[in-house]
Image (cartoon, rainbow over all chains, first blue to last red; front, side, top):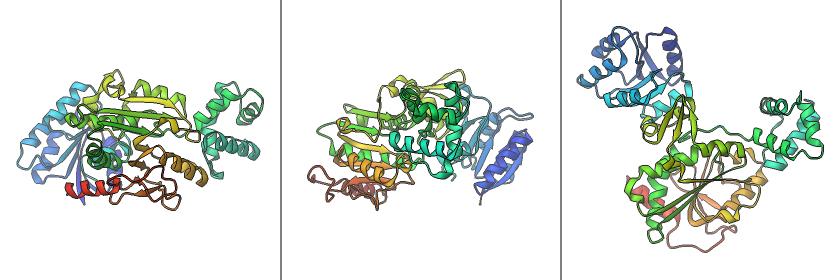
Length: 121
Length: 296
């Protein structure tokens, strides 16, 4: 079973994402901010990361840049999932190493399509 | 809505659009047609039916047919047909049309434009391989309302996220407030025309590829066979027909035959009675099989 790290400071979003991704046969690990997510990744890299942008302590952008510099950090597929929907922000995320980008609000079909796009399903 | 009203609407929709509604689709009719009734100052579906039965109801009939035509679609829907299009169908046709350097593609149920624009973007992504080629994408739909939306090429944030990879969004769309508009370059690759598949479309052809996905499922068996056999007459002998995942020609007509290893892709069957012209040097199936082998 593939693992997906869901990183979001909103417990509601984490719960919604968990329900959708568990339905897609992913094992879910949750983190409330970028620093918690990094701690998880240092113990073991997930197959996928569903990543919010604006979070306390460490935001999604800084987490992604740090992840991509870690040994093996290029392997997890990272899908941003954020209310940041300006072209400049999307381009910045892709430049930092994101594989896909979801603009909130999202639904099951959008997550499934994006995960399929990056080869996770 | 009484059972008689529902029967009337079912007959009307079948006659005018080929749409077949089973007895359990009453909820769908109500959800789609109540807004049409209200827009026309009618309080209920029964009143709508009475109005449709009265003389001079042509515009209202068109509105009803348009509202019932399924328009659910998204970019690169189902992904696999577009992979076949990029990896096998187009390379095969580029080889076969080298001297003519012209490709004609028909999206037979274009809806709000996501499918023809997806094909246009796939072709654009092929870059210099299509330099010097004349490519025409003809996109048709029964509904004028959806064609107007398609021509504008403006989509909500929700719509662009359905199937469209983010790199393609950045490359081919411009953000306008909360919406996204596809580039004029991609829009100019597609010509839109209103068309009822139950009517005559002979003059549209010939085409190298026909995408007719997720529309025949709403037709009864007789209409399905009729449409597929008439499509056969506008497809080049070495061209292709692409159907939806839940559709097939098998068991309905021998006008087309499935292309091996290409789910949803069909080639004209030279042995069929519906075939218009004689065989060409290599069949589409042979060329695709060659491409498939080369890719592996």
